[in-house]
Length: 234
Length: 295
Ligand SMILES: Nc1ncnc2c1ncn2[C@@H]1O[C@H](COP(=O)(O)OP(=O)(O)OP(=O)(O)O)[C@@H](O)[C@H]1O
Ligand SMILES: [Mg+2]
Image 1 (tube, rainbow over the protein chains, first blue to last red):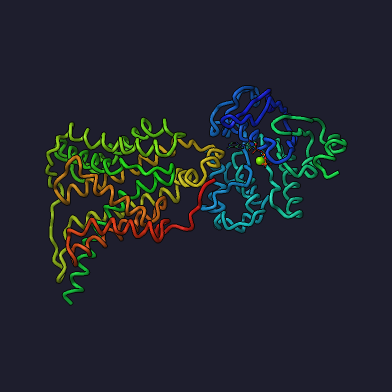
Image 2: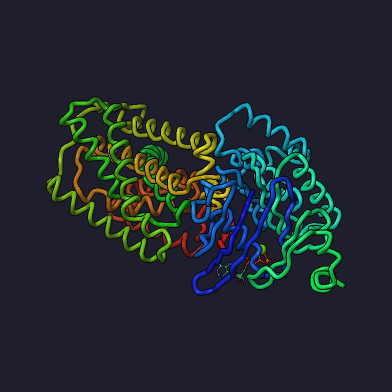
């Protein structure tokens, strides 16, 4: 579904992504793990079109989407939940969700999806007219996920959904990610919480200072000595 | 009693003048809210609007409302054109480059206006009969009432657009977090263009209203009201729409009070004194919260 081939991304002179290739098959959860500053967010921002790769190909469902503007990529069916949630704090929960459906015109379908988001996240329904900035961290994460789902993506990019959340909430969020995947959305999950990410993913890539150092079946990677030492605390 | 009458009379004058400042200030604040640019050419768009209204009435013989609409459309398109030609290519340039460009555009419009329209002031056609009402001791001009009514209608429409429509929500989203807005599929360039269009149209309406009220327009007429409206936007909190509305009215009232009770020579000084005081004591403006610096 998503096939990234040898992309290179720069911030000015900084070479942040070095010749990365990633392959996401439809229906999977693929996780990208790595330490701070490895280039995980940069990878997602490049897929979403917020950054342009200097070289390489990003193929989504048979089309090269490298370098096309971010708003066009959402229309292609890729939606991102950015790092730090980035909800529109000065707007209500409902308005945030409406903006998630910005590219759509089908009123009936939007209404339907709004209801299913509220079903999946009942806490958002209770806080429908509350300003997003007044939500707790976990609620904001749910809102950011709900907002991304409102565009009806076929591929959902998640950037560290567990960041700053209590362990119980992290579990909840991860089980929701699994659920979203089971209802037919392919997921590319970026995480520092490698344990949790590997436990729900089918496939994993390990990123180290801009390069992929390991990749393969998530269960196998979770069992490997190398990954256990570096990312799973022994 | 004398004092109270004078006070109320100046309040009436001030609110009418202030609603003009508010209309212009809205464009400053909306553009600032979305691309963090003080668009110094904005006062000149107000002048363009006045001229468009002048030609629509004097040459095309249009009555007030159609002329107002024509002027708003023309100025809106010119505002969008300026954004497209002058500011969009500088989207990733340093702020100072854009600011200098804005000053350049302002001069271009002022002196281009002199070239096209001649520096000679024009007498605005008398499209709205001026009737003076005496209500007890107070004097209200029918044109003052129209200025107020038109301004209020436009501000209500604007508030509706910004609060309730999807384009308004997109504007607020872009202004809050451009990247996140792009991730929603919002075409940021189009929203910026629409913002310039709307802001310019509001300034044009102010230009037409002033043209009718003072009867006279000239190519440099936008300089002072442009600066005053900028003060009004800062007073209310730059980037905040209700702030621009309140800032405009407050500034108008203060100016009227200063003219009425002290001397009209201090009017302009009062406006800029307010700017200095605000910048010293509450730089985020009356409606501003703690400064939210983007990282
Ligand atoms: N806007 C930027 N300008 C310059 N360098 C940047 C910018 N954003 C990121 N970088 C650099 O690119 C590299 C990768 O950053 P990135 O944010 O992709 O890391 P990450 O893996 O997401 O880290 P984290 O887990 O902390 O979120 C880092 O060295 C970072 O300093
Ligand atoms: Mg990151």
